[in-house]
Image 1 (cartoon, helix red, strand yellow):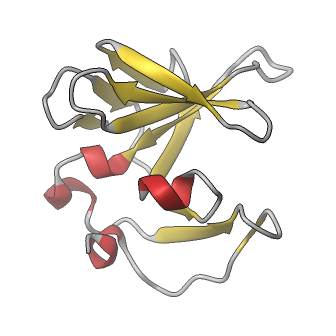
Image 2: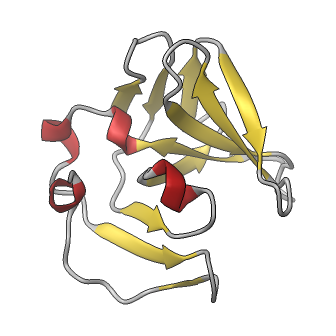
Length: 131
């Protein structure tokens, strides 16, 4: 299990399984947030506590980003619609975790700006992207 919290600790999340990779996306939103995403299903793999405000992507509104109402950290996102199996995809921002717990997780680069495809691996891990 992996845990994370916003800066002020008012919002917390847990991810039931430890992620094999973290996604760095260059879409119009993610590149501004600087988030690194790990995925699961809301309410089963991903659980959150605390009050958040949300932002819907301006282009499609398919993803609802959640922010702490106190410190403003982006903590997670949840798909607005469930999949055919009834589960709802969610992603947690692993930058909200203790660095020592996630430093060795490989980065998966995703081109959300142009091709909407995975980019070649460059061998970097989370600890390589802290700065």
